[in-house]
Amino acid sequence: MPALNPAYADVLELLTIVPDGDEAAVAAVREREAQLTKPAGSLGQLELLVEFLARWQGRARPRLDNPMVTIFAANHGVTGQGVSAFPREVTAQMVANFTNGGAAISQICALHEINLRVFELALELPTGDITKEAALDDKMCAATIAYGMEAIAGKPDLICIGEMGIGNTTVAAAVYAALYGGTGADWVGRGTGVDDAGLARKADAVDRALAHHAGELDHPLAILARLGGREIAAMLGALLAARHQKVPVIIDGFVATSAAAIARAINPDSIDHCIFGHVSAESGHARALEAMGQKGLLDLGMRLGEGSGAALAAVMAKTALHLHNNMATFESAAISGKDA
Picture (cartoon, rainbow, N blue to C red):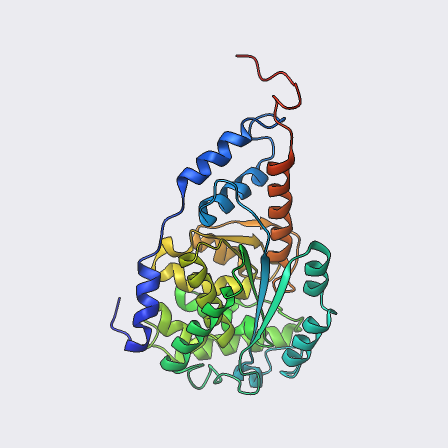
């Protein structure tokens, strides 16, 4: 990798030297699964979810006593290019809606007893317009990554990473184009519901941003600073801290995945503790997951953001763990096992 601003030294070290999962814990889960009253492997992905929790919590009996959804909210200067159907003020208004319980993610979390935390990232100070200037300078980008690491301060045993930010599907598309190639048209989607003219403006904004920053996009963290946003940087920090504190992570949709893409571009092993909650209907998400060698757990045609797809995947994880812990074994239910 090219030399970077020294502000990123700690981030690079944490991304490069990552702890492994606990395979002994996985073996213990598999041993119990083999005793449960069902054909081997018959719960499919639900069984793998329990293994995932065990591996990254480092527990033979994983638990979900404190699952958490974290939403990182930020504003973007690129909204001045007419890339969104909604004004920038909606970001702060939706943050209030999260807190007041009126948003979809608020209701999902309330129904399924998942904690919800919202991190406001200088909403009054939008990032630079990426078509004309860097979104963030290197020191601010590094500081925002560090701030995102605070998301695990409440000691969650599972963290779901989501975001809110008018204009952020545009900056995420720019990040993907810089990482994986292609033009703006290859990566942008309708986001909050832009019309055809708005979609064209989004593609053009991405293309102009790539041209403006050409020659400065030679490292994933440089891509993040030049083209990304505060919420993407903070989500990167959250997933990085989670890895080092043995907290499994569920990533939400198109924008949240861009944070994992930055991490993976530096060290492919750095996102092994992450699963991707769903495949967004936002154009480009499936393509990004394919480029990363990943699959979404659910495919519900959602493109809401705000951690909603990740939260529903957490519901699946809670269900999987409940079955693992509470189903009878062949012995306890006096049911004959499979013939030898």
